[in-house]
Length: 51
Image 1 (cartoon, rainbow, N blue to C red):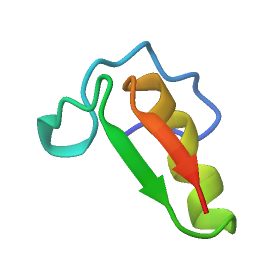
Image 2 (cartoon, helix red, strand yellow):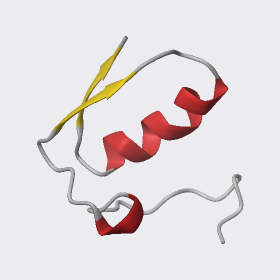
Image 3 (cartoon, rainbow, N blue to C red):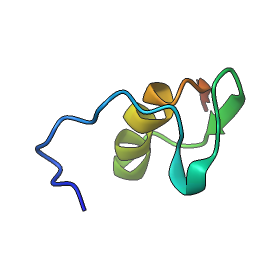
C-alpha cells in the first residue's frame, strides 16, 4: 500500500484495472473524497467532469 506522501507514478489504469483513458467520468461533490480521487482519475487519463 502506498503512503499518501509518496508521488503516484503515471498510471494507465484505475482501480481494478479499469482503463479510463479518454472515458467520461463524473465526480459529484468537491469534498475530501473527491479531492483524493481526482488526481488518480486524471492520472489514469479520464475526462473528468466535477459537479
